[in-house]
Length: 296
Image (cartoon, rainbow, N blue to C red):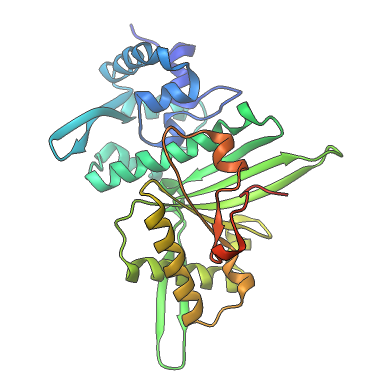
């Protein structure tokens, strides 16, 4: 009879040093799980273990949607896997029902896999920069359970927006005196498919979220940054900044509010220290120059 041994458990819920597994990412490829817990040369071993889990009902495997058909496999939790994690004390309620139903729309899968690449880079930061670590994160799939409804009122109209970030990341850094500094982020991963109207609507929703102070109650933090990432290149980076500037100008916002937004373009392979600790991020005011996102 098949049973979950430590090598399988590692893929499902991670380890004490990197407590991230398929449970936290909601769907992932063999390459992503290898990057989290193994050396690159171990990918065939990881694929074999994922196949064992799928064959025994712990995972569901499907090919990534591509223009030519199905690509490499990605994996989501299946009934046996959910039961195993529930018995281990993990919450497997509403967040995972959509997984069992198989939400396999191509845009959904591609966005989630790209988002998870960024989350993996955040989870591995401590390995290359020991004074920094990702204390925890909340995935979009869990944040959808508690969306924030933002209402924008003017003399002539009222608009209602829904704020659901792609992820909430809670970074910590160790200070020289032994104390810890908390650096929370709301992550928005852009695939270059959203047009100006929808992008600016997202920015306006965040403006309401911040100006009302609702983010403090919603995430239990005093300050927070909204970090936009993309793999689509410098032109899209400039476009996101331009649209954000336009929305800030349209509502006559002070510069201090514009600095809550940060933007960067990323290249694969992702190197954690390079992303989070190098000058590659721009605020809504790029003339101020690139900054380090997790700077002191």
